[in-house]
Length: 150
Image (tube, rainbow, N blue to C red; front, side):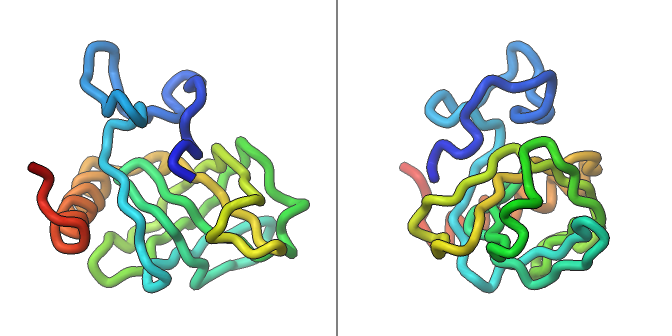
């Protein structure tokens, strides 16, 4: 799972907001820290005319997340699809709806049952405030649950 977003970016898709010359994590090619989160972190969004809610995420950063989608939707997802009215369902995270793009579809990870599918998502059209709030939350969560880096 560590490399679910590692691939050649298409314009600004994978490394959203990273401009030439800006510093990114050399191991993960990410601008923002990513954390693993528990099942109390969920999302909701509209997909193919259906409202889906309380879907667990396993990781989160200011630029995206990894969500577990029920297997009944496996045949309907593909990279590049947009998810509208995407909302983070956690009291400490912004609840404003955004758009997210599927950048990775995964079916063989430990966190995923044989029926479910994992989606690597890139947050699109986010405000600076949204990005800052999520990034601040991720940093605080990391400090409390993982510890401060030396």
